[in-house]
Image: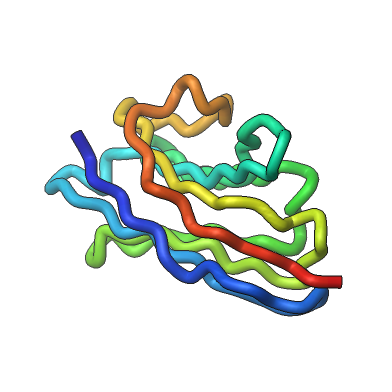
Length: 125
């Protein structure tokens, strides 16, 4: 089992930026696919970005494309989600997750094996 710990959430005004981090345990971090998800109150968990270790591809949901950037630092066993031009509708609990197959897509919660505890992001208007 992979232990994941998210950090970096908080309260920000619309148009602002935040950077989320997700630190993972395990010696085989570089072989995992990593994904970022979010869940707003009353809504289903939504996949927003992921990186496949198999081919290095990065995927973004349309709702965040052009505003969010996902990156990975294998030396630190950490993935990041840089979130720019935040909107009130980005308010949610953000989770990182790992897919041990190394393929991140399709970005569906049921495909992912281990999850972090989540970090709250609140964007005020």
